[in-house]
Length: 128
Image: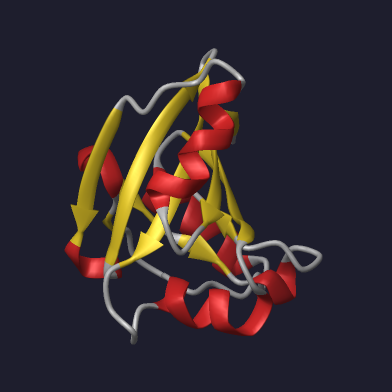
């Protein structure tokens, strides 16, 4: 099911400010884009065959903005690359895993994503 860890999402109030730390480690921003559906700006910083994804809310009603207000900045989610996303969502649903998205939706870098609720993952927001 899981091919690799695609990225770790980090919620931040300022991509510019947070990226400064990762720049010191030698990481550079590869791409920045707005994901309208999720009301966020996303900066991707490659790390080997994985990435760090800095996520900055663009609207006060963004789920990421609400997350920062409730829990502060920091790790927001972990993303696993999977084969046949829709099929995997069906398998999870059949096994009574609580899904935020039962169907894929647009994500960063032109991909399709779906989130699994932290209630079913030991408290971690998981993106597939």
